[in-house]
Length: 349
Ligand code: SAH
Image (tube, rainbow, N blue to C red; front, side, top):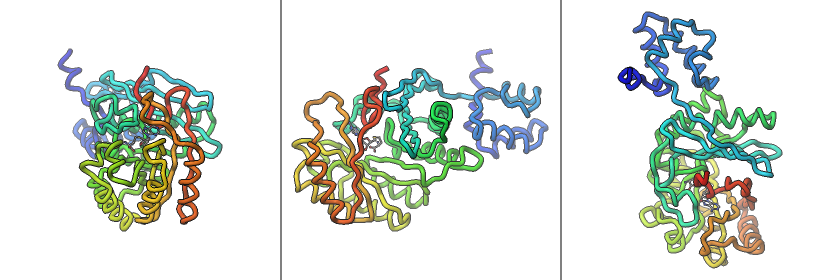
């Protein structure tokens, strides 16, 4: 018995062609694979018995060979501003978090790509958890499918945007992130437009170039936070091995192929980057390729070194950028009361 359980494969690890081969091998039509695939990826089906247009005997055959490993929402919290945070339990018991952010015009899913993170950004709560593993493509896809359902259930509106700004560094789990995005954007999957997806990275230069070479269609956001090497290295250790010059070169390479504005995420902290020298350096960096800036509010992770700069400083940054033709938005945090805001995802539950 135990042996049979062990040998059952997760059906969602199979490509459509492999599923077709399975059915042919068992004397069925390749078309059956198409039907099952739709149940798995369009309807996010979690149980073979829900596949009502598949005969009972075929369902039994599937159960004999496969399992559907799917995530479970272990805990769902709602913020007073409507934001929903899901603590998502994976098949091996590990937990990641994903967030639904409602605004007047959009409903955005913020999803995780890794359990924990290896990058050690000094201001981020996720950095305090060591990286435990990468998420599989289906675990990433499931977070989106769950939020899509929640969006319809709680808000009566469709999910409109997806950002990879949850736990982990998406470009260090590139293959699974891209495979999940394929399912999310495919007409055979959730059919969402790639321009509605943004992958946010700490700025892994080599992988940004790979994205350009692969001609991916989603958007790129880079967590910059400082455009002066010394400052950036002091808050983001990745900058030691992957400095601003290398990052700039990768971004140029990306823009040359993709021709789409890059978004820079930037937090302004007291005494760290709240002076004109840092603002000017950011402006200079923004001129490398067409770009826009999100000045994001700092969400405290209870570390005295980091304190949000004053509103005046934020406005100084914004005016400098805007007067030089660069769109800069000051972004207020959402879901702070439930620790669902940027940088606060750390499985407190
Ligand atoms: N690893 C990716 C995605 C995860 S973080 C990346 O670095 O982009 C998503 C965004 O939240 C990043 O811009 C990150 O720098 C920012 N962030 C991290 N900690 C934060 C905090 N305490 N307050 C505000 N933003 C934070």
